[in-house]
Length: 279
Image (tube, rainbow, N blue to C red):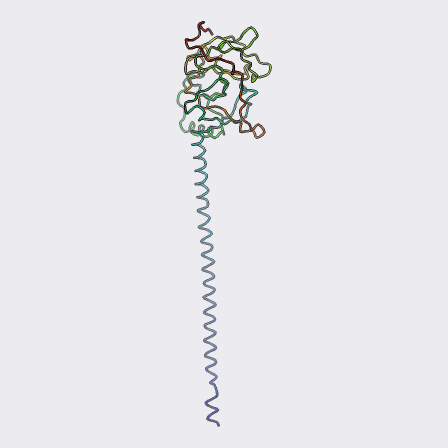
């Protein structure tokens, strides 16, 4: 009986050992879980930190790419210009930002009577200027290309009144400007202005343009440069493009109004005009 009891009775020390082993295993598992949690937390912080740095680089790269795209677009397709003077009122007002279509004349087309164009007046409206600071000039050109600064002093915006071969005269007995003998009703001219306070009679050479502002009393245009080299005639290859849209201010968003004032004007005679022009 005692022997059987001894065989069936469990050793208390075995329970203690087993319990301590279980406790150690549990403690080790807990520490492993804590270590794993700390590693996961640290790796999460590393991921967040590493995510922040590339985001700044991505932002800078995207910003640089956008600026480069806008500069390329401005150079080849559409360029914004800021209107700094009253010479084209009421069509264009001071502070307007216009979009100039650089493709308008690139594929064989040429400026037509009535078009509002932006052109480089070097050699026709202004003399050749000495080279300035190249860095300052580059920064200004970039800002002007984005419409953030006034255009160069050699850039002008005017309306084409006469093209190569045209005879432009002002004024007839009724005070109107005529082109190739046909009176032109210039409804775009600023209210109260005469077509010109200065009389003139000129024949436009081939590949040149006679240009005038819509606000005739406030515009320095071809009339003011008759005695200069080039006679105030703008070479066609100096035209930057056609002003097609007013982009800003938002309330003036629209296309630049066209005109039918020259629809009745005939082409210049093939043999030229008989009477000699005079300024």
